[in-house]
Image (tube, rainbow, N blue to C red; front, top):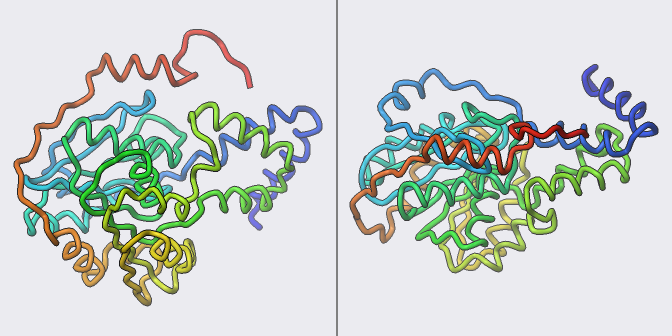
Length: 311
């Protein structure tokens, strides 16, 4: 265990007897704060050629990038990542006649928030739909796949979906978090209460296998590496088994991240999306106004309100 983790364990041990509420607030800040990933140098030229626009999601300004014309495919990144890390998919999709959009979800990349979550990533997909028109498909990596499943279960209409290395139950990471930091059940209950109120969502509704029952008949391709150490292969296999008609492609030796850049894996994704894709004209992007972003911040982001709040 690193010295940082040992320090956090000591902090929770000292703080909980003083205030469970403050301990829960600290746990929430830690759990929902993703690491900031760097932008790969190879992604910069491609991003510079995109049309950049902004979305407003729960009061957060979300940067987005759009290429091409044709059926629109959204790329949804995972936890601690960013849209630029999925750009290896852009050129192959453009070559098959798709348009492509990606984004930095709340709490990630260049978005102007430090906290992120699966529900907010799902809301970003709905905001993309409102801004850029109907989505033909979403390719989601890791937690981006789970967010896509959530959006579909809540009404997002897709012709196709691709889940790369998807987690079956993101809540399993809550248990790991609590065990690693030595956080008590009382503190976790406080964290749960706080986060559910802030995100307007119940933790019980975040199980991806259960969402398969509400898949709306969306054709699904799951691509997962059998040696993935971050999200186990069994997770992807369980989702594919529960999702009606889903296909499962198993890779070897690619792990959790290289799978998004592997030419063979990308070919599986593009071929699947191209099946039955009907060409259509791209919809002009309707970017969120500065006034809309400001208003959403005032309504939903506590740190932007004029009244003072305490933990």
